[in-house]
Length: 102
Image 1 (spheres, rainbow, N blue to C red):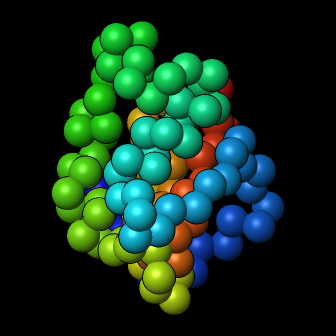
Image 2 (spheres, one colour):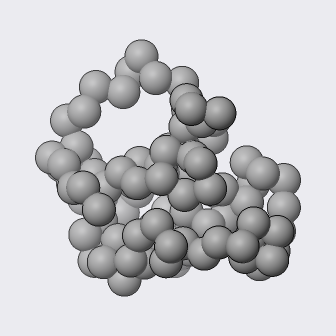
């Protein structure tokens, strides 16, 4: 799970969907909800529909620890692939998913 300083220039990239998370919803839960929204399925159906869980791509506890509750300055970002989406989560509470390779 690569972590970066969050300074990646993604202005030229087009995200499929962008959502926010905060102390009410852990980043790992919000990632699953965001991907489910992009796919048009219920978040609880991801495993049944695709045979995959977030844990297949990233350790949810580690993700939540790295990005915290979304009140950071955007200096930490984690990027990984889940269900063929490239996902970027930063500590400022932003989740962006991209389908560049679809």
